[in-house]
Amino acid sequence: MAFYCPDGAMAQQLQAAIEALEAEGRPGLSEQLSVSWIRYDKPLRPSAGPVGSAPGASWRGDQPRYPASVVKLLYLVAAEAWLQGQLIDDSPELRRALADMIRDSSNDATALVVDLLTGTSSGPELPAEAFQRWSEQRQLINHWFASLGWPQWEGCNSCQKTWGDGPYGRERQFYGDQLENRNRLSTDLTARVLQAVMAGDLVSPPACARMQELLYRSLDPAERAADPENQVDGFLGAGLPADARLWSKAGWMSQARHDAAYVETEGHAPMLLVVFSEGPERARDEALLPALCQRLLQA
Image 1: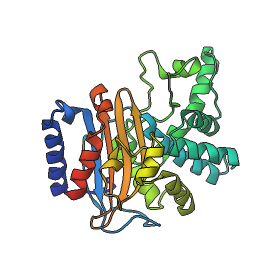
Image 2: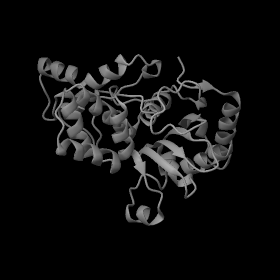
Image 3: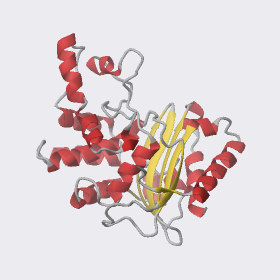
């Protein structure tokens, strides 16, 4: 079941944009890129409810890739779901962690959130029986997303913390010998999650409003200059006009540059755009995501 209506003209526009960007000196881009793109006839906020008729297109949108910090969007949603189900207690410290996880992409804050959601903690390697119990607990976020029944969830995985230097001890043990248990998301799945958050159609409208507040990004040049890690420059938001409004969660590391964004701007249809780009060249390419956003906004 699609969560948008596939649009042939948009698919052609998306392919043309990717081919043009590849021809500019990015060999292999079409293999390194996943994109999900949806346009709306009216803004999703404050509460649009289910969105099933919006036109959209994707490029390798069902291919799971390592999501870097974009996975923090899913952890935010899970935290609101746990709070609604009274599975965890609300507190100023939890709210501080959620804000730092999304606004500043803090890995330390993310570690606390994952521990709270799953009842686990990092530490030394564990013997087999204890490790099995620990691993089962760490799957709770995956189980919840699977319970939504979304076909886009197939092949995805959101059970790992995010790291600066990498996992150690039982965390490294949990990744598997070949890192086969790394986080994996597709742009289609990420787009469906972000669409539901922006439309007030996931967990509850008040929870979505809180999540939207954390995802909002300022495009003000002075504010961006004061925060070099603003998740706008080098990402989709850098391709937007100054009057646009942006809600997003970016991800960046040595092998990836990703972004998931919902955009409203004067003179253009509201759109949702999720882009995952892989490889060291793409990770260093600060122009790719802004250029793609600009092309698709004007398409």
